[in-house]
Length: 338
Image (tube, rainbow, N blue to C red; front, side, top):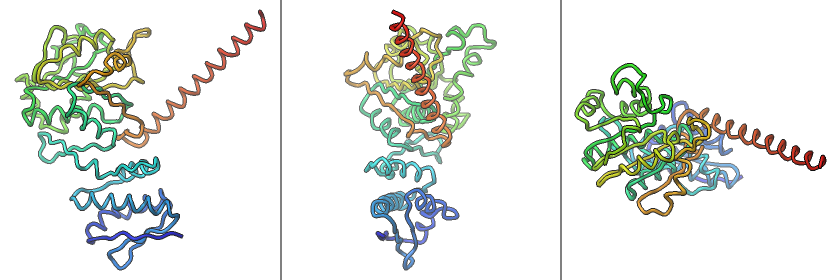
């Protein structure tokens, strides 16, 4: 049995570390198979297998660093760090807390929740065009909106332009009732949901009326040059290669572009290639353009979202194996006949 100690500086940080009804510390004990007890009121004793104890000590000291900076910790953060530790990574959760995105709601501070998300905040500062590709629930749209609003707040850009392909309406939108805003409103709900968390409703409406924030379907981008703007193309897996080229060539001086998408959820008609899938090969090695690929471990929604994504991946692999086996057997049968 191996044992190690961690110093606790106050009862307040001890309460924060343990969590409500000791949920935080129980999660650490159960996940890492260690025992944790309080010694002399100002030390934690961690005992168990040596490797597990060292992992638990690293995690607890990491959490204490976050707490001592005045930040709360939660079960989601702890689960994520335990997963990172299980991958033998030396990355520490407190690294994520060094990033803060300031938005228009004073009480709202946004931080990356995963190391994949951290890349987005790092790369946007050194690139003009950023592609963020990953499965549902990885915070692609949310972080893109946060960065756009932060840039507008700091007067780094003059306006925000939100763009989405309206695939279901064939990019025409003409048959839908109402004016343009009413026609495109359903397509922009994910972006609106993010904005409402970061900006008072009245300010958002005011920015819309004055063109400081603009929403438009992808088809309306043709012929424009967008200077001093923060432009988000969301749901980019539903663009064709021609549409992607058209959009990217709207780029103007003093602007930033974030393109987000999930290449596993393409809604284009069959035999239509997604512009997002082939763009990485086309634009590779161009300075100022960066591609970030988020993974299942970057999912920040409910834990079931990650499990659903994994289940679909396994089902896809299973179906692919069946098809491959059928094709092999068919080929063998043809050879026997011949």
